Image (cartoon, helix red, strand yellow):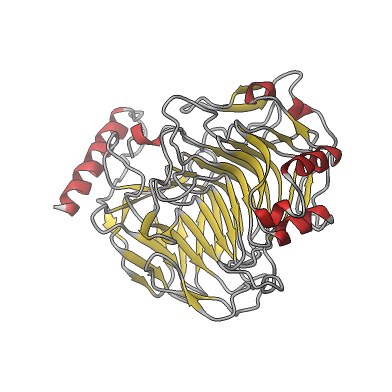
Length: 451
């Protein structure tokens, strides 16, 4: 029955395509959908001339390369909650284009897709983490990571890729995220990737050194960007947009959540310490919209001795807080300049700056945190409207471009580091007034898109 359903889909696609075909064009060939084998042990290519089906847990084994052509659509069978796992030593080369993105999505028809219809992408590498023992990946997926030390390990490429309706919570604290990066190295390319309607986190980084640009998280239920276990990568040009009705009822929906181990020793975290570096992000909550879920929470929850560099960004619209520090280690690192928060525009509905526990308050009270942030060149706004962006909270056709007079067009660029990875620009946030990097390949209304 499953094969028959996808065959009917393929035939309907052929009919629509051929009805628009010029009479002199060759007849296109559309093949029936094909199930991806659960164990890929040799190099394999997913071609764009058919729909490919994930059926249950699927592994690309060490030594094998999975190549995906531009324009390819991969659907998951919803009864088996498929997940695509790139094992340690394997690679995925998913390289789409702006006009032919690669799409991973639910096997349900348009109009019926739901967050959590399938598992997601799991990529396991050999870069450093701060784990003290080898451990399994989360969510019941087979695979181990930790204790390797290859910072430039290469797990492949995700470029012009959309991941929709993924994320399965197996148990509290053990989930398959839309995209999970376990110890993924800096040899991996991550550029132009959109995650939409993730049931759990959109992007979660468990250690590793992978860098990324042009990343979008839309309509996530849990955290949009989650950093753990010694992640030390760099990210630039990112967008978070929350939907008011979506949040994890058993957790808190944060734009950024950053950790080390679940329990940090009194002497400090194991090494490497989590220290993510991000620049030019636009991080937007649902801004008190009608029906806002009670578990919509913080723009940035920085805890468990995490260190960070957050610069040149726009942060607004989260219900409970904006910049939130927890633990004495986290607050101390910011207070002494080890962590950096500069040239950002920020506001929140309840508390823009918040020392989130007694340990952090002992280093920096909420008031002192605001004083330091503003002295460091950050602009605190009265509300999200003061951002003066075109249409940032439009849920089907958002426009994040700054308008004339927007504080996103003010401030002075802060170089996040001297690595050469970051592109210097003259604006805060993910896009300029004339940027086009979201055009064509993104989709903020995937539920009604026929694939």
